[in-house]
Length: 288
Image (cartoon, rainbow, N blue to C red; front, top):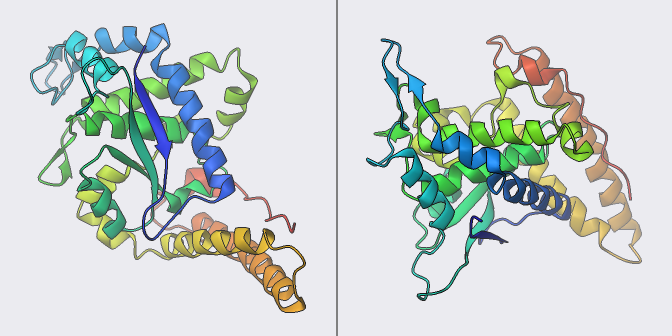
């Protein structure tokens, strides 16, 4: 059994809404099922990859000199950071992040911390399976494995421990979905050719991320996330005043309009990078 446990928390500038928390909890549940599934260990211990030159390697890229079995042992026992001898569990904090500065705070945190990109979590296509894969990736990063050199993903980065284990997580979850109706429902949203779970450690270290945050659709995602936070606060108010009710209705209407605008931006993308998800039409925000 892998001894990692997660604690859902917040930062000084952000917190998960109730819906986001529910999605993160569902992702953690999938993580726990997958990482303790026999197929996950088997896939890691038998991992190999072939370079473009035709050379086959029977260990991960950037594995810190470890064999596949040693990598698995590290994943299985790695959550014993600074704990008292004999302690079998420790916690990894899971917090929301939506900016490079927040990701930098997490990257420099003195305690094991994973951040979830709130610019994507509000999308229906970003399922708990995505979150589980993100958790696997970032957990491996916390264990000291990397897929970057000088802030740039290495060639064949999909063969590094974080990226490969995240891919294995998705494969094992898909295998489990054959008998799990909830998982089967999530995979209706997943396209293997464009599967991106948006690990924040990769976004933080890649210089290009600073530029991509200026994209209109990303700015809209940031605004949508902020408005969801306000919407949850307004919906929790009892005996709303007319002004509060008017604000609630306005925020709800603006959210639905913003999601429609974002979908139109995806559909008309000229570089084709968003075409796979552009067919997903977000449902309207319910007015509670």
